[in-house]
Image 1 (cartoon, helix red, strand yellow):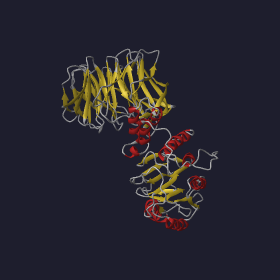
Image 2: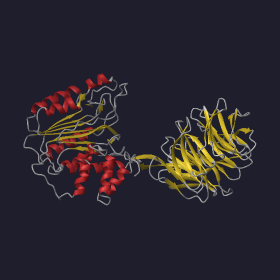
Image 3: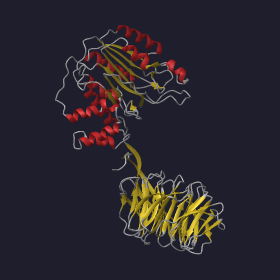
Image 4: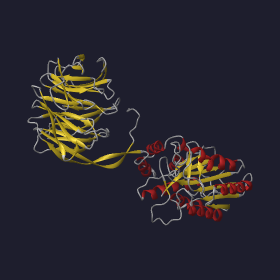
Length: 632
């Protein structure tokens, strides 16, 4: 159903009308292979082109069906000898082909299925040097070459350098290049098993438009692109021929061209976008620029459609539903902190009942529940975090200590003492060698895990520090404080790198995404904010109470927030839109929320010692690629 070589290649002089030389066409269709998979539409393609070029365009046609390599070369030799300077020449091939990344090759009926790349180069024919260069050497006034076969590479060469389809041909002045499918797309041989057309999807669209020799070639090609895109869309396939052109907009095969209505500027720009300018800028930028110039133009809807689909848009998961999955019962008082283990097999919880607990959650629906109870703190436990290897957890407590425990249970391995106020948060470094703690005494302290000794402290905040995290690379510390600031410090010496934000109200929590490109801040003013290096933040508004935390999903596409307003909420991290509520009508808020490592679950600590798992289901959508340009 798919084709491998995706090239439609025109080489033409810049004159508007055709020259007065003899018109000659060499047309080949190869579908009945000895070893390679047979192709259904190639003979029909060749016969269709032969009919149009002979009957409508007045070419002398040489047609060759299912030749061996030698038979092709002998026929090509005879065809080359017939060419005189100034002739108009067409070379048309439909069949299997392949590329070694530098050159394109045509495969005939005796091409081997299994071969080394070196041998395959000598058992197939180079399109560039073996065909097109030989024709050009005869000095034709026009060279039109159509290579239509975008099927998956059929060869087994045992090497990774053999690529799908053909590489792009070098463009010389006076050329028009049209690929039957765009980059990373497959061109359809047919629309399905019941497709009765004798032609490939591309050929059936182009042939009728070639019948009028006076029709401008670029206009015919542009109309073909739109029709191919529409036909492919009927079976949910993405195929849009790619165009590279340096010929006049008004070139045609006749002595005089039928230009029809005079093109307005938008039409000229659109055809240029589809052709000459394509080689100077990626297609997504061209569509975007055209839309900016003509936001209400006649091609605006088409440009928007292309920008909302690959390759101009990325495939992403759209939240369909958040549904209750399970309750984890065991704590006897409020739950203040949660953390999934890196593998997703375990969940840790911190509670006002002075314990932290480890739960099995990632095995199967029938295998989850309490695994370990960590007892030893004398006041409520405010946070808990796994070590990168899942062997340990670190807890922070209102008893002014942080403690490191083995995840399997037992007494603490280290008790980190020194703070003079509640320890609000503790986190491991990415290598597990250090722990950082935040405290209501206004300080941040870094500790050596092996010895329990304090390495250094940061005391520049003017109020309680509510959270602290190591950055994904471990070279930065991100803090959120009741003094309204979110700050980034060096993790080696505690020096200030920069301030992320400074607001009148307390910043209750902050974390970065997995790539450290964005910082997510939860605030007591009832909002969350997503910051980049520059520009204004994306603001998540909708909660009716202070936020306790906010967390990115593993892929960075969503945010989950907890707040003192009866619910947790899910948000689109790209635009700040609220997606869903996670709400327990028997509770009076959510103390903490966190995504599972696979992004398919959310753990929520609801008020009243309710620990719940919520399952997320998704559907696929396409969203525009985010701009990499800094915000103004």
